[in-house]
Length: 370
Image (cartoon, rainbow, N blue to C red; front, side):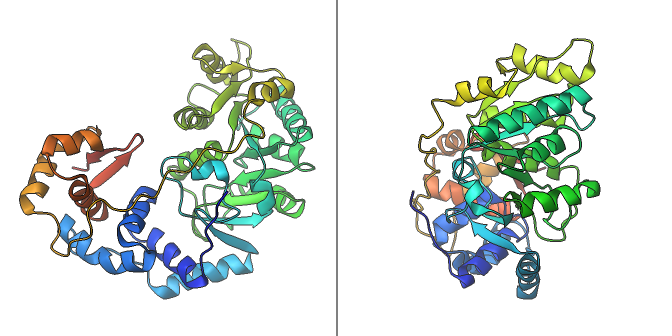
């Protein structure tokens, strides 16, 4: 697989661009496509945001980026950019992959086939034992185990997979472990050949909305997601939903109808997830994928229309704003509706995103933030 290699200056510019206000992964990739480099995109940001209706956009000062890089160095972490060696191959292929991630521990483990094992924080003893059994079995078959370092099922899966390799994906910065009681476990994971992984900056305290982002990374870097115990409103079901959207297999362990912690798994099975009772069931289900080349990443295509300092015409902006609303619509449908060249429509959407007026959704859909 072809990999890029960024210089220190390019790493700096990539980190500065993704830490800029209103620049998410999809907007980041559009900016790189359009301007050819993060440094050139950073120069263009103020004017793009102004045309989108925002007088000022916060671009982090250089000192702030230097402090993050220095914090990573002190923690023994490495910054890995999208497309570089060490970036998980399956994560590269999802829609809107994080452009920059921080990793402590083994980059080689991230190149192995990985399977996510997730479940309830308030796990039963039998659930924790089963998660451990599955994780040991997956490790014995040469598969790495991914989870979210939470209490319960996650911790049991990590613990059991220590001898063969496990990846802990954090919702906050790598120096902000949640829950704090699992800091010793994370130290063991990193020290015994595993890896800690996060897209968030050092010092970032995880918020409730950061955990779904973490769950999307867990499923995105994995061949499949295995749910051991999950209530109907469990965050583990978010991970399973992300897996389905990303084209990953979903496995679930059935449980007693009398146990609320089994309701989510039983619902998953009822809706098409594969029922499993042991690691052999998972390995058998994944046999066609193990050893196969990972899916190709989304292409970074050159911009259809070259950047125009004047920007798109005002009447096109007005037509796009009129066509958009709070309900997500496909970008292709929007292009057909307004009857303009795709590059011009994408430019207006980019301006609106940088101004904080546009929300991006899966399936290349967008909506207006009212």
